[in-house]
Image (cartoon, rainbow, N blue to C red; front, side, top):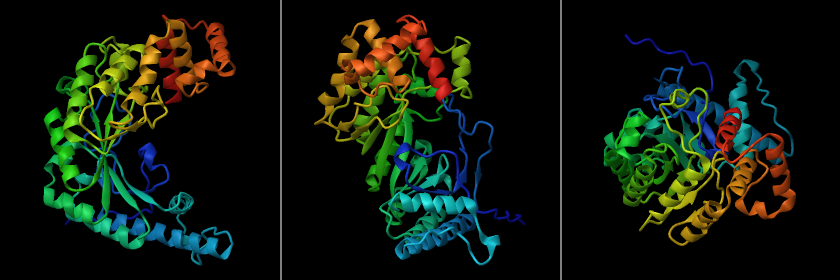
Length: 379
């Protein structure tokens, strides 16, 4: 007989998309069932496991009790500290999650960890329905999912999930190139990425697809840009989110880079790849978002097709700059001293960055090495 796992209180996983920063985080699974992508440092030393459904339901009930108490205290004009009559019931993690959720307006819930839809469809539907009953005010319930997992879920079950409240899925497509996907051990091919994205859309669920500029390295840059754009043109996701390639210490791809086995693109070449990618998006109505601090160009933000020119103009202006100005912008952006390309036109912002570059010996030839060091420390 299977041994019942003990319930140890409310749990939260380590990550969520930036767009879910104000969401209540409900952990359904622990870590990632694939966990082989070479660019990803998360979960590498952790095993994947499913949380028992009853534990997830307990989490929901626990955090709801705190949310209700906090909301009632706010109505009464008092401050709630989570002091139940039985102090043994106090759960600090749930209390913190409840405060964060209430402060964010109680509009969204994110299901953790890396691929929660891998659990049985009937179990995810049970959890979704309990969330709807517990938090009827919520506008959005979202989750990460792998394309490989989505492709194996029936259209009927995806529609049931949508009816139970799941209304946005985040998929890390990263690339539409089969050669790039194989190189980084993504565990899926372009055809499956397209099929999964189309299934999500048919189910009436919003879809965020992630594209990772630079993932193919110098050798596969053009293919990476064109094949990724082609895949997204066939999917027409609600959101295309940019995630510039970074090489954190714990990622296997970093080890390959340091061994000379991966030819990482520099900032200027990556900007050219991003321009090619954007210019190749055709016939779709996706919202493009550069909503991560690792992205070099925050200006890449708009809705296709109307805002395409607005998004590509800064890239063309950057590529037309002389090498020193490109260096100043890249280092200024990576050190958070510059926010947008237009900041180069503001002496009070540009000149201190230029001085910093000179003082630290930054040149057009070594700027990518310097930026790699900056980004590793930041990550």
